[in-house]
Amino acid sequence: MANHRQPVLRRVLTSAAIGLVLAVTGPAGLARADAGAAPASAAAAAPKARAVCPPAPLWANTGGNDQRLIQYDTTGNTLSNVPLVRDYGDIAFSPDGSTLYGVDFPGSPDSATLYTIDPVTGAETASRPISGPLAAVTSTPAVNGLTARADGMLIAGSFATNQIFLINPATGASTLFPVSFPADTVSAGDFITLDDGDILAFGTQIVGNPSPVFRFRPDNTLIQIGTVPQTFGAAKSAGSVYAFASNGDINLLTALPTTASTAPLPVTTVEATGRGFYGASSAQDGGNCVVPAYTLAKSAWPEGPVNEGNTITYRLTVRNTGTVAANGDFTDDLGDVLDDAAFVPGSLTSTTGSAALAGNTLTWTGTLAPGNTATVTYKVKVNSPDTGDRSLVNYAAPTAPGGTCATSRACIVTIDVKKKQDHKDCDKPGHGHKPNHGHGDKPGHGNGHAHGDKPGHGGEGAMRRNQAASGH
Image (cartoon, rainbow, N blue to C red; front, side, top):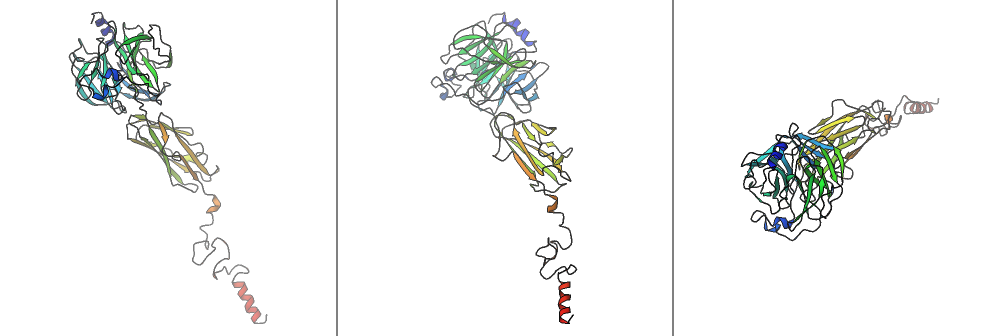
């Protein structure tokens, strides 16, 4: 590699917006190059065009003085944001989305490390040294591209060479990938498997200049199709590619030509974050239709009907039913509850994530690992007297990608409030509390055990019969 790249590397190492390449799985034609590392099934025919997937969240890692793992939706809204323990040159999900990998940047001479990261907390859960030609890149490996291939192998790039590598995540062993960037280009962006089977690759030539964008064909040829603002990471969602620029912009690539060009590609900025992105990833980068999935269910106790003054406890349960970490956001509309009841101060609790009540709307935000749940509870006290419509109805709704109600009625709860007259006489003597009163709620109706002190009932009738018998 030419010496002029070394000053470029030093500039990147001191920049707050360090380059990152998200290497994504190659199509079957590229998979054949990993002799002895990839399963034989990887040596298949050229791939067919892939069906467009449902939307999936975009994940990005920042570095320097702001080391964070951030989850975005495709409009740029932040879904989660947790701290990281170090600078990662890039992050990448496994093909099923269950494992998040990261590579240290720039890495020590003759070594580099592959980490697994908990996407919920940002904590490192395991590490493995990388061996082979990637670790031997001088003067530092500078790994800043990482993506899972469909067979589980990882594609990786380096800012210090135009070569591209494969990493076996089970062993950490690296091998050379059959495709390289042009001699004047190194890795500083990402690799994305497109729906048509090509690999989209972002490189860099001179720091600060636009990033050249390439298509890698299944036959291991490549063409440049244009340029984009300097990009340090990319992620795919529902067939669209989002480039994470060095200035903190999240750019949607609105066209991906198939013919050679060096002209700027059309992009739309969906969010200007101002952050220093080092990399990005999505569970769909390797060409799989992996999407988050979670369910929401709601219940209340007592189920009702309730009396004025009663306290009702509501419980909402969010469960991650997919294979990838999911943001399980929901809202709960209390508008038709708080006209009949008052929210009990201090009763709102959450086992994880963040719950808050603003006006009549309760919101919860949080990220769950596959199979995990979160439980939110709160209480309301029915007004006494209740001057509302005497019906507490509220709806909860998932608001993040992949959310559904556990059943068709799982997100709605209806509780009626008893009317005052339904229970106002229940404590009066002779009304349903003594034996032999078949109609305890009606005066003077009993089986011979009548109310003798009332006209025409028992005592007076007996007196008249006695008077008739005596001639009066």
